[in-house]
Amino acid sequence: MAEKIIYRHNVMDITSLDTFFRVRGGFNNNIRDVYFVRALGECHDFLEKIQEIDKRMGMESLKGKIRYLRIGELSSIPGEDKIRMYAHMYDQWKHNKILILSQVKKNDLLNETIAKALLKVEEIYRHSKRNVSDSILRNFSIKLLFWLEDKAGLCFHNWSEKSCIKILLENVVKEQEYMFGYFLSLLGCDVLLLENRGDVNIPEEMEKLSKTMILGNYGTIKLCQYVPPVQEKRRDEGKPLIQVSKIPKRATVVVNDGKIPSPIYKREILEEKSFEELAKMASSIVMITVHGWDDNAIGTGSGIMIGRKGYILTNYHVVEGGKFYSVRMEDDEEIYFT
Image 1 (tube, rainbow, N blue to C red):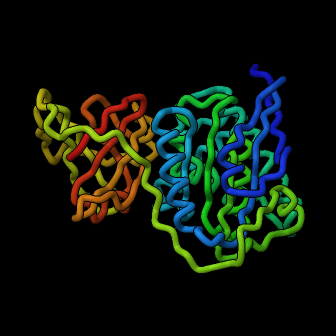
Image 2 (spheres, rainbow, N blue to C red; image 1 turned 45 degrees about the horizontal axis):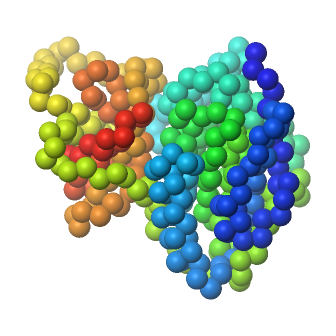
């Protein structure tokens, strides 16, 4: 049994964006210092400041010094298959007290930490709101698990209690989104809510979980989607190419190094599998960067690699509209292009 980690919040005042990104939470005697802060309004050079932070923190993340992510939107769970998959995870956890995720690589200490954080967040959510039924609480927690893997899963590869993870959540307006930020802080992340358009309206018990920093008056600036930097590789170095086959609602990305012939399937032996069944076959997590017709990156998303033949399963909305794609695989520094 791993020793219990205690997360101590906001032990020092954070008065600027630079301070938030400069501070590195200590870890002593199983006590980890983390920060959960709301940055309100816009400073005079707000857009340039965020762009500079993205560039600087992105490069530090690429070098392995920290892990950095800016999340622009927390979407609903797409599709019934995924809803059933995360509902099954949650129900199994409630039944046998063991939480097993589909995309975050198995790590007993991390899984135990996630389970404890989920219990803590459920407790606060139930106490701070009236008439929260078990069904409402279940749906809320299922959403947290989905957001964790879909939006922040790559931050938890090779996770340890000493990992330095910085996450920005943009313009959080709902209680559940706010509690997702707190949930991440219970996993050892320093979380900044970038509330440049207005502060979130939440019960007092929830509000006390975070500290505030005033950047200026509220404004209307809309940030572009954050695209992590990659170590560019020449496309003619003999590395595997990636072929994208678009299928309604999902997409399959195939890595072919030229040594494995494209398989020929007879229609009658094809059998559709649910997302949950495919997730169990996953051998790796990948980050997909989508490049538009001007060759610039226009978005990112994650996927799961299935089997040894290089099939990658992702949601259709991730690759929709792309001219070509670059893929980085877990524990592999190479970038593979279409």
